[in-house]
Length: 102
Image 1 (cartoon, one colour):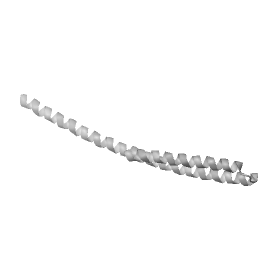
Image 2 (tube, helix red, strand yellow):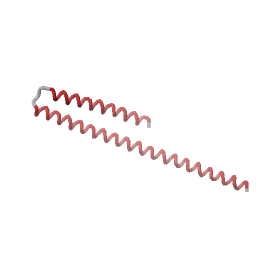
Image 3 (cartoon, one colour):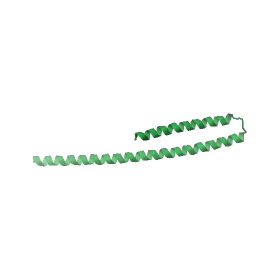
Image 4 (cartoon, helix red, strand yellow):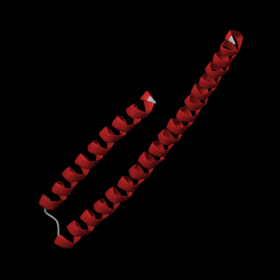
């Protein structure tokens, strides 16, 4: 599970780097000496690309979160079964000792 945390922080760093690059590219486009129509077209393409990448990142994050939740549920179920078995064994041992005393 510790590796999943590393994936999220590495992914967050990558997303931050990517978004910073997009902002820098957008500013460069705005101050570049080009026609307004050409600049708007480039900004639109850049925004569409950023949206697609953000959606991809979101899907990956959702998938990793769902996987982590499923692993957590499996872990809890396993531990619940172990605890239940231990309680049952304790009850049986208690009953045996109780019967010996009687």
